[in-house]
Image 1: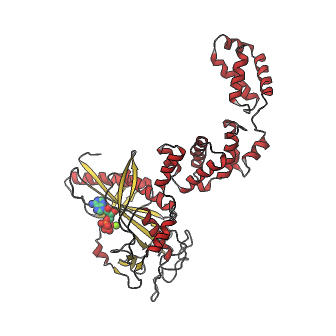
Image 2 (image 1 turned 120 degrees about the vertical axis):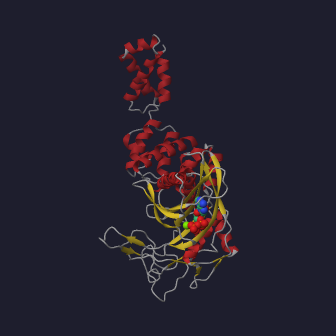
Length: 479
Ligand code: ADP
Ligand code: MG
């Protein structure tokens, strides 16, 4: 990228709060229902209905605020943000403006091995709008109001990121956090986690921020990175050609990999915000805050640190294992249940298991092998019932069905041969049958040793203990 220019990015992340019902009505929020089957009179904006705040969203927002070290507003206010759009039958969205529930906080991101603190300006509660459907209606649009009134927490960052990579790292960190806290499922395909990226450029050394464009509604990490990078290029091109960047809302087209102007940027006063007269201000007392604080789970950063300390993991492995709460729990269950060979557990979880999940496109929560069954396998490697190689075979069978490792080992006859007499007899026969190779070995061709090991393993179907085999072969061949 051009070194004369530096980039400034601020993100607004919308995360859907995991409540059963909507923020101001009793309609359910479950994803995927037939259009307009989950919109009640309040969501449809029938005259005379009144919104009632769902208390759960308040608790979830507080949970978030506490975990980014933010001030929780003792008094916050819902405001009407007025605009017209077909998917917003009320003509306004209930949001928060002057008095958001969560004030200034921060989160640390890792960027090229270094930690960088990103300020969070605020986080406020609001309702989602409905959805316009264009595909099934030729020349017409359909309106689905199932989403209308879905609770959102909008998390607004300071303009403190200076590359697309940092923006993605920040977005991932927030995503990880909301999932740890279990305040959102973070499902990006279903629209539960999406972001608007504000991007500007300025000459290196200039203090004042450049004019920004806002890239709307991006719902994948990959697209955020691509959209920001392409937008940075565009803005530099505009300025270098003598033009000016205009403040506007732009749309990212992932097919053409370009951003396009949607509309000129509206200012807050265009929305004629005012406190919603139908809703009381929210007052939060210390007791509720203290109660939520006492029940916060261990957060990703703390967990990562603990993993490094007590399991002796490097930073990358610890990051990897704490990438989700479920994954971390899985790992710790295995350590506890398998007999505690940490290195063995780490290798199997980050290697074989993660690889197999990845290959099948599965999440840890969908793993065909649960923690107890994998622990059962690692136990048998630990006590040398089976070799590491045979364990891979057992793993395959565990993956396919419901049997335990012990059942599989028993049924398939995979137990390691511990009877050294039996192995000795096999070795003797191999030596007798392969006199040419014996001579080669004894005349100094040490490579032939591998041939003997291979023969023993073949004849024992891999069930001989490799260390024992090596020892015995060395002894017999050196006579
Ligand atoms: P609005 O409410 O109009 O979208 P805000 O001032 O609340 O505007 O800012 C929204 C987001 O834009 C914030 O995340 C902020 O950090 C970011 N932002 C503001 N100015 C700039 C800028 N010049 N360049 C990049 N990001 C910016
Ligand atoms: Mg905005």
